[in-house]
Image 1 (tube, rainbow, N blue to C red):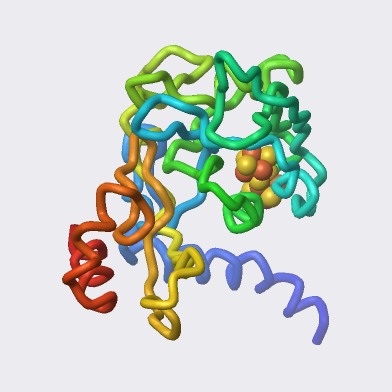
Image 2 (tube, helix red, strand yellow):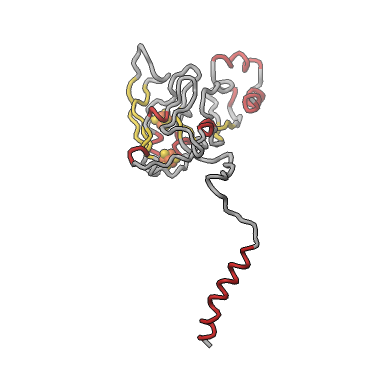
Length: 225
Ligand code: SF4
Ligand code: SF4
């Protein structure tokens, strides 16, 4: 009878509550308890530099073109011959990311030909003004010594050390057109924030080593390092 079902309805609800009451809690008391992030977590972006301090971004706009949320704005300019900013012909003189639009998919990281843009483990960056959610080049670009910038002060929530942790993404390395490396498959992790050494076989310093080291061994050494 329907009036009996109506009468028992609330007790059924309490039964569900009582069944769950004794079980271990699966939620956490964030921010008092922070969960360890997975190695491939995608957090805030950084713009990286080479070891000599030059900017990696060449202003090619590939990251802006591939971004599904249309949240990157880049403008490239010719490098001044007497004081180049990047090793290429051009550099990114305007670089902005609207973090309110970003879906943290890392497609910009995959598209970037120079590993200029990478992602970190910092995601605590809430703001009260929409303007503050637009990260400019000053905030994204690491300092000459490789240390990252952030518009907010460190706090219990904002651990700036997380800006130095890379997103753990792996990419196939380019053989740079060298016949020695034809058919050799190698992978390298996406750059962590800071100054990264060049890959084996891809810098003048490593050329001497690869003269006498088979390509496979050189790449394994590089992956171990
Ligand atoms: S992570 Fe995705 S959505 Fe965010 S800026 Fe990069 S490509 Fe765009
Ligand atoms: S971050 Fe990379 S993909 Fe984007 S403009 Fe700079 S070099 Fe090109």
